[in-house]
Amino acid sequence: MATSIFTQGGGEVISSYSWEDIRAGMGYQRYYSIIGSLTDGGVGENYQYYLSPQIIDSVPISLAKTRSGAGTETFDLDFDTTFNKPSYVSGDALVNFSHFMNNGSNSGSVYFTINVYHVDLASSETLLGTATTPTRPLSGAVTATWRESCRITLTPKHFGRGEKLRFNIYALITHGGTGTTSTTIYFDATGGETSVGSGIRGDCFLDLPFKIEL
Image 1 (tube, rainbow, N blue to C red):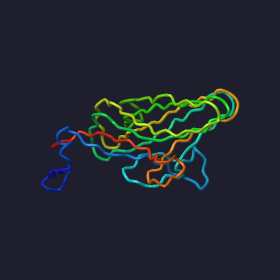
Image 2: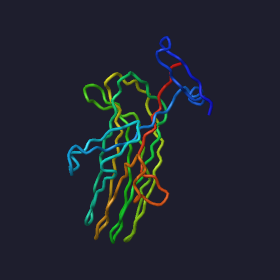
Image 3: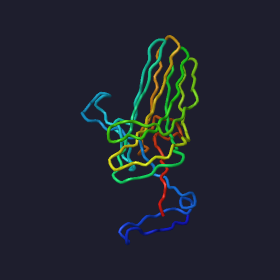
Image 4: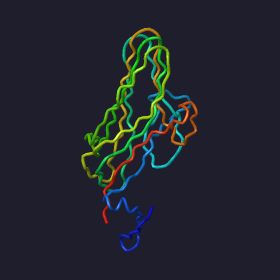
């Protein structure tokens, strides 16, 4: 793909964009959802969740919720990145991630809602866009892995220095009766996880659209 290069600020900054980015007036930055462990053998509340433009390891590389008997369980995870330079987000965000369900001896299902927020310096959230996946059902003692792909139309928003973008993953897991249902979400940016499923990637990422100022 052809690339055009523009200099800004008397040559102090060099920005490189593809021709398609220039034509559309925006460019995409990929952010990976990463988990970091604050303590050896730490439990969930001791993990840190953040967005990284770099491909790095998550520790752990997956999270699971288990439900025994009828009822529901939820995931509600926030991954943040802080802007150190004013930026303008506008367009459609793209999201990909994988999840696995090991069903018990009864029916089970899961669906995900993906939310993108602007977080100001006072920690107040403003929802910029949301999308919900189809409900993924299972019946009987079976397993399945799904790769989800979502397009989220965002409300255009200016991000000031020190403000955050928050990528929220919410899941509702339902179990219909006896046995145990387990649902796993993967955050394997490096691709080392082999238990996701044959030919199914284990990374979770957000492609975020930025307005290009030429």
